Length: 330
Ligand SMILES: NC(=O)c1ccc[n+]([C@@H]2O[C@H](COP(=O)([O-])OP(=O)(O)OC[C@H]3O[C@@H](n4cnc5c(N)ncnc54)[C@H](O)[C@@H]3O)[C@@H](O)[C@H]2O)c1
Image (cartoon, rainbow, N blue to C red):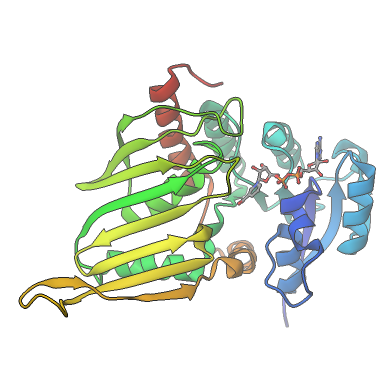
């Protein structure tokens, strides 16, 4: 007999909660919390909260959510009413919503990234969840993408030989989008250390500059280069390895892989082949996240992305920010 569906409360009814899936075909891979929970089949979307009545009503209607309210307090929920609480509100409100979620004592909180705007706050909430024995998953989405996990395994298994260097490109804030990049680099290469930062630019958020940086992962040099958020979204990563070059393009929507071969032109030399460009598995990540969350709650499986991994990424983001602009966040 299958276990009863896990009961869900979603706080914030915007894009990541469900909006990005609202207009997509029913059979398209889900990109949102509600979309992934609904597609999985092992969850029941019981309640949602948003002060914006139109958004809330549209969300409740689209995802068949029976209970909704303008705030968590107005929901009049009791401890244990929900197994999982998703926090999809604006980042500045995450501390308030983490507090409200902890009061309701779910088994797991699925919080959007960044956990909170400040490192000390994030540390405190990660600790608070641990103290209460409540699992905390953070939506660093690529940790659930099958191709990213495969690449992590290949790199760890030495399938690409030595990693010579890595370059990442991002925009829209060292914490907001740079946090995704640092977290991805932690998964693929291990812990980063900051070497140096360059000139910050404020391309989207007032308090979250986009900063170029030199880092290292062990003896692998890693550079972060910047684009401008006003031009286009840009999130790409290139790994230069002994056996070839792997490039994640378009945030993981595409990959390009080139292998080292004997040069067709110069006898005795090696060169890179034309390679292949293939569709990435980023669109599969949210459903994989839902599967992982379900297994974490029902079976004790490890979470692929949790409070501690997010905290480690935010540590590096904060070091980069402080090095570039020289003032502490709260
Ligand atoms: N994982 C990712 O790749 C990714 C991508 C985009 C955004 N995000 C994160 O997701 C979060 C939400 O971003 P979004 O793009 O969905 O924003 P959004 O503006 O589309 O949605 C936020 C929703 O929260 C609601 N809200 C405002 N105040 C509230 C309150 N007091 N209580 C409950 N709801 C409230 C808003 O009305 C809105 O509907 C942010 O933390 C953001 O950083 C993550």
